Amino acid sequence: MRSVVIADAGPLIALSRIDSLDLLHGLFGQVLVTEAVRDEALPAADYPGKAVIARAFDAGWLACPGPFDTSWQPVNPGLDAGERSAIAAAVKMPGCLLIIDDRAGRAEAKSHRVAIIGTAAIIGLAKLQGLIPAARPILDRLQPAGYFVHPRIIEAVLQDIGE
Image: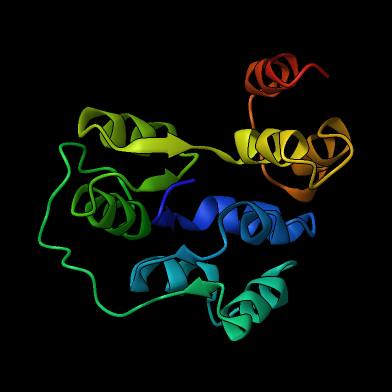
């Protein structure tokens, strides 16, 4: 297990929408976010799953430890503020794991040798760790909840975990 895990907003929102955010707690203990990611995950407007994220912050396992140095700039200027800040924090913490789904953000993180994992792989890992009995039913809830993960990615995760 990695000592530091940082998350982008997309996976937090996706997992909260399908009431599976606690998988992150079960897998990693504590997950850190930057201020920009916290602000994206907890906007003023309400959305399905927002209360789940707020409870995770209240419980302390999802935490924003304070300002990260965000002077780092990505090669890809199209990344949003949360992605930029999450990658910047991960670049400054060698050996950490970054939870991110955005294709451009993943490419940026990989170019800096940051270890990454996405939402679908989180669900697969939870199955392998015995936190859930099966991954497919949870993966199948993502798209109806408004979060698209390419079917090839879902099938690859299911094949990797033997489902």
